[in-house]
Image (cartoon, rainbow, N blue to C red; front, side, top):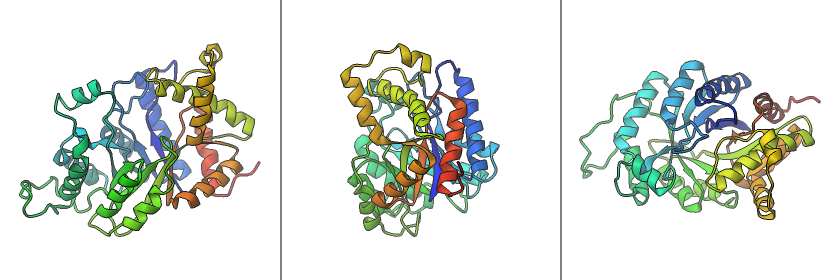
Length: 334
């Protein structure tokens, strides 16, 4: 079972943005030492607690600070950008770090409507243009735009030998089918919406070999918190529970400290929201985490899991990634 990391570069309460950025570098180096497959950065805007706003820059920095782990984006908000610009950015990255760069793109607006508009410099929403932009991006990456396309004569530079593999992030059967028909990689966001286990089988059934990929490859992204005991894992996950609760309300996106959590009064609605959010997570001992990931692997027909862990305790977060990898490699000893 292959494992990777998705990093939103969160700010833990009490940190500065500069410290959060440095911590992302350190965590990527830790993930490489542990043997994780790839390290991707999300793209978020207009938040006080998530500093991964330029995932292509973060990927470049991580690639420079590591030796072998694949780096990429999960993902570039394609509706807000020019496919040519994205292609040239990742051609440059692929030229700088051959064989190590992934290009993951998503359909998210990047925030509320005002944020989206500012990001696109006032242009109309490109959400409905996502399928077209995705096809054009693939065409620019591989110089395969149709002859009748108005930009057919425009070549994305630099003209690298091996373009970055293209992945699409999705939450539905529709996005899965689109990825399959284009012959690109698919990443399902269980950590956002765990209710669509049919998406991955649909992707693989719809897959047609392309210039991007010869065979289908599906990744499932999920929250995981792992510790030596179930009690410890549950305690650590409280900061992630409260963080998700705040994010869902459109409030603070910094990961709360245990001290702050103790002061909060949860309503019954809050408690039910936390219970529902736990469906987006795997929380427990190494044995429990391995068993649950194996179950989800069969359910989703997943080729790989991408792990996201947003808890307040830095050392425990580092240890969680270590225990997860050891458990999957079957070399964890109590």
